Image 1 (cartoon, rainbow, N blue to C red):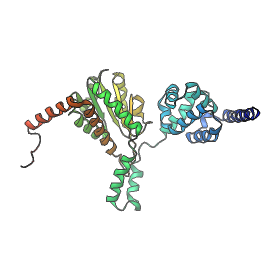
Image 2 (tube, one colour):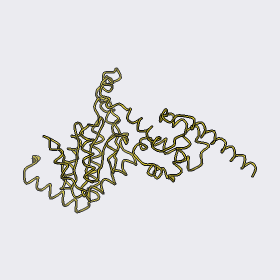
Image 3 (tube, rainbow, N blue to C red):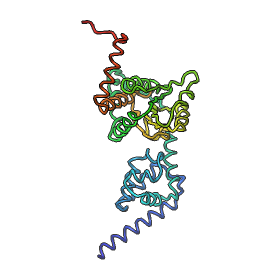
Image 4 (tube, one colour):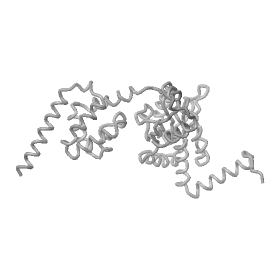
Length: 317
């Protein structure tokens, strides 16, 4: 019993020092790097539940700016009181102070990397354009999909299949991504509309959206101002919003009900559309799979109509 008491007393003393150390620091001077360092140094002294909370914070920094403390605690598998305790150990009085550090880190990321990526293309290590192109394809797709991404896609499928109307939006460089998904979806979900936003019609198109609709928004970095404004308007229409973007910390994600983060790893100076094309194809394939025979009948009917209208050139006999 004495040994156990001594061990417990040692932990209490260690934690006390830990708290004093952080309390003396100005939280405004914190950075996410410093927070991670302090969490790592103090990890061994934490209780089992606090360790879970600390690990979640270190592993998921992009989630912190987007959610309330209750959501973060739930995602970490701990009670909100445990997350409060961890934040207190770090010297923060309120969760908002803690959250601001991660928001600041996200806001300091460069808006675009066009110039630096272009310089890389001119670098000596990129002398073979064909091998680099192959490497770029692999790099763009390898980090795009994981268990979390597939879960988000699966949830998106259910919402899309139940929607009254599906709207798709993509501005500037994201328009091609939106157009491709619209092309694929109109085979399987007839009530699918592409928001084009041309000739000043964006607000008029958004005004048709209602609470029974689902809107898929493509928001690759650098995120256009038009996209953020459109998302604000769509949110007011109370539609369900699915955002396909590169980072969970993207401003586009703040209005999303489902976030599909696909990364932005590319050797090109412009964002790669490959992960977004793959996302669209996986999404539609899942809709077909879940739709069963009813979906097959719909596709066959649509295909026959296109054939009758002579939409495609028949292969030579």
